Length: 377
Image 1 (tube, rainbow, N blue to C red):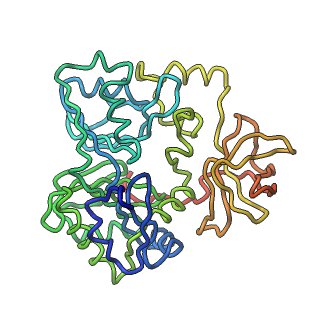
Image 2: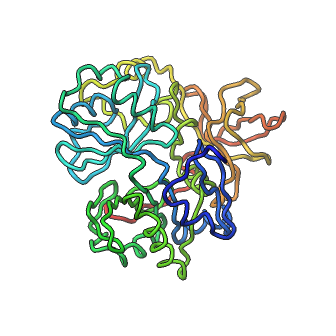
């Protein structure tokens, strides 16, 4: 792994006994720790787990025109956001495909932080600054800066996440609503930004601090909850957790050719806010109903459905798998499959070609794992 990048948290876990590191999109990251993927998954569902997500990118926009400019770039309404809130949204290209999906943090009237996917950070920065059709009209005082190297992002996820974090911070986390954040939170003497967000289908928090202070925060959090069952978690559990919760992964459910409609994210597209890049193409897809959708499949026959595997109905090809694998919570193999709108109904059987053999599965409703969120809405 001579050419891969490492996050600022690498020294805090690299020497951990039993950690397994892999190359993930050019980053050397833990796929699992000593407990293993199954145990890590179950810890997040029943207790809490700690993830290094510092490979994610942080892009800041500041200036008088920041709000209007972002509203032209993303599918959600930035102008409707209040200070201290987060917005999940999609950067679309002119065809209605996804440049990326991201979180917008409204830090103030004229200041925003975008949290983007690690592998797309440079691409997103170029798109946001120069390549998108609105770039030529952006305000002259708008400042856009990629500060990814300066930040650490730690995710604390699970039903006991609030309990552990509350004991270490100087704010009342009961007052922190879903998809909102507190800035300037003191955690172990370090000023942090804490948001009630995550990628697991559980309650939890994402904690941002300076890169140099990250390893100390990681160790503080882990040591504080270790005797009660808090464990470090890797990319393996992160993927099984997000798949059960039907959360999209860029490069799978979202791509340059598959945008929010084809990823089941219509709710995150605000057609009423005014024009934005990709709006015309998305409206045309809705008018013609000529787009694909995601459906959930539970395998009846044994077999692991993987991305790209072909899906058949009555021996006719109808689509392909976007994501699949074992659900630890259900103890079954599951998949998200992309098919033309209206082609598959709940309860119908399909066949997925796995290692040259067609295996039977059943179309079921999603998310695969359903759990009521217990935090403040």
